[in-house]
Image 1 (cartoon, rainbow over the protein chains, first blue to last red):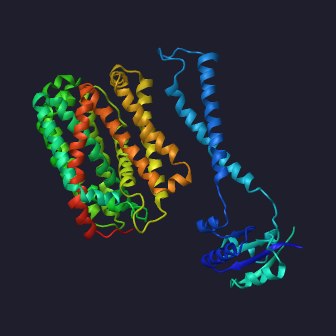
Image 2 (cartoon, rainbow over the protein chains, first blue to last red):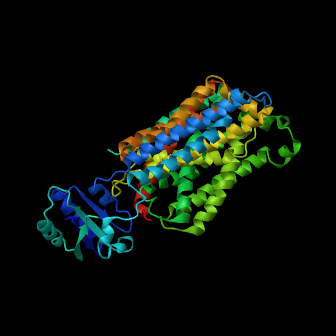
Image 3 (tube, rainbow over the protein chains, first blue to last red):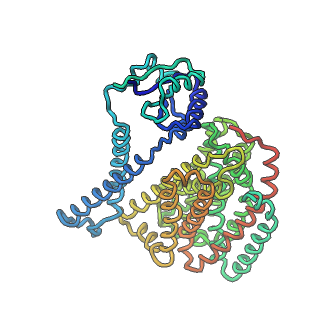
Length: 175
Length: 353
């Protein structure tokens, strides 16, 4: 039993054509690999960065609240100092640190959230068993059709992929 | 009908409306020259700001190249090409300078005599204004002349701009109250001009023919400019707040009183919070309609901020004269920029990378 089939293409346009064809044929459980971002491919795959944005906003707001709250607590309750008659709750002076911490938290959360959503870091993935897959980060484009898609039939799917004029079609092992 | 077409079709009427408002201001000016000219100044700083923001964008593009300017070029180029018009529109201010800037009639309001001697005097003021407007006009025409990457034009145009915008910011706006100083004022003014120019493009043509689906680029530029403008604006306030020196505090206290604080509150909401928050979702960034609305909000915000900067020296009536000045200069300028200039440019200038 394999995890699915992988087709290798020479050019980005060929991959996009294949993706469009697969999508039109009703495929949903599939993935694509390319050396550089292809926005249209992301659309065809229904891939969204949406959750990362929400994670970043949530973390940014938490960081902002924590930073502002800490400054407020320190300056007003824990260690109040009269600085030239300025109010203890010196909000203009609190804002720069609040902004910086919010951005730091948002950026860190975006990175960590992206890694978590992609289930990274991960030491091995079955796609690396595909011969020549390393070139996905150089100059080749790959389309993966998962065997978990209800339309997957080993032979029919291989025929379908061969019909898209790939360089080759390989099997992706389960593990 | 797209917004630029509408402008072109109504150019004559806009021009007449501008002239009518200018006439009203003129009549007002016979009774209260200071108030009327302040309104004119507010209008000039706002509309010139759009043209100068466009100038800065064209200059940056001449330096860096790239395709990013191409969708904005049809809107920004006519704005830059009309820079010479502003030299004429600035003339009433020079003629009535004594009614607007306190140091013209009474140099003793400036604390140091050497400042009056070397910088803040009427001949120097006229010379700097002339050099700035002439330089902007000449570089502007060079920048409009071609869409290609030309560092030899872009670099000097930007360097000139950095100096000129600081000079004009100090001369025209800050010296209304000569005791207030802020070293970041020129940069803050330049950034809000950049924001205004981008908003102007968003209102008129967020996604021109041939650039469908590219509205997101303009949205991102607008967001970055809004962040930069609010950052510098706030830094200026924070430095004054922390320094707690009487002259700087007095400037802000005057602007913290009613009705000015309301103006600035609405301005921050419209020109900072609105573009930064509303443009966060991708859906909004890609929607030309949403961009046009947000751009309109930003322009109103920048206008209110301009009135907040200029008006308080002359009291609440300056709000009305600023409104008249905005209609006057805006009408005259859009009448020219949207009409004859845009038509000429549309034929002569290839929009390219």
